[in-house]
Length: 277
Ligand SMILES: [Zn+2]
Ligand SMILES: [Zn+2]
Image (cartoon, rainbow, N blue to C red):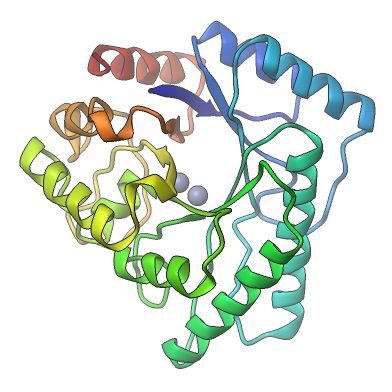
């Protein structure tokens, strides 16, 4: 399995690639702009092309963009919806021009509206985005921690989007900390086996393109989104060993999203390496 880190690119693409390569990564995920904003920032074409060349050179493919946390495809606010669509469309185009296979996005929150109405709107918005998608790029829906009205907390719901939108470039990312917070018990081999059966039934393992491998201290089903260092939380080495060495997941990419300094990144990568057989 190819693993990598969510890597800041604010100090330059070259630094980001060097950092990932030094830590032995074979994929990379990053934000294309401010993760807490809607402002669209375009890289200079030469820098963007150089980044793609560097990622190829260091074997960091496939790579992934993570869209802004503000994205909400289920919102009733028109301005918020328009900004969300524009941002994802921008990231999809950017991905295509930069040899990036995956654009990973949160789907947002239903707020106080009827879930059925929100669900329909999400399907319509996904279809609209996929109408304009170029070959080689996937729009990847990340599972949520399932809190309150968050979209995409269950495999059934994500599977519903896949079936209703019915587009081969719509895919899924499983964030392990979110899955745990949403109530999926993946801390040992039998739990992982049952979870993957569930994934296969409702989503299809082939539609899962990436994993976010984060441990967590939130209790099972606690519905909070807090990431913790690999192997040091409640999913633990038992859960990650069963998941990351599973034959069905070998072709996926795994991204560590635990924020930290270099020492912590190195610790997480070392833990991951000791888990990967
Ligand atoms: Zn995310
Ligand atoms: Zn995640």
